[in-house]
Amino acid sequence: MMCGAPSTMQPATAETQNIAYQVRSQLEEKENTKFPVFKAVSFKSQVAAGTNYFIKVHVGDDNFVHFLPHENQPLTLSNYKTNKAKHDELAYF
Image (tube, rainbow, N blue to C red; front, side, top):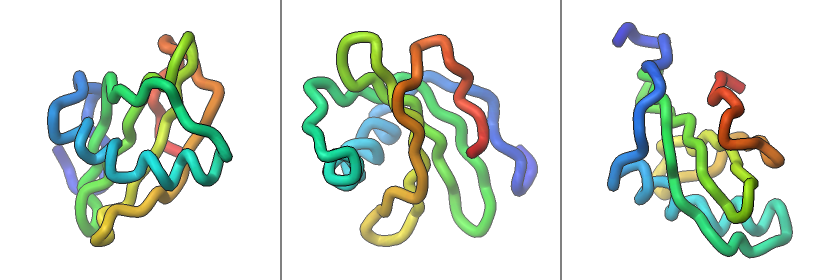
């Protein structure tokens, strides 16, 4: 992978799920809701002054969220998109 170029879509790993869990409360607070499910299903990574992860997470029913945590310590939620479907492409945002 070239610096700055996002990777191809990959199935979520234990590491990806761990990253998702670390920003779950931030997302729930911003959306003022508690998600019944929070399962990372796929991701892309991007190397640019650290590693960015674009993660697709199933949050219940047919609802998915795409989000971008930032590698600060602790992880912070940089950006997200709600009301996504399973087939929606995980694209740069």
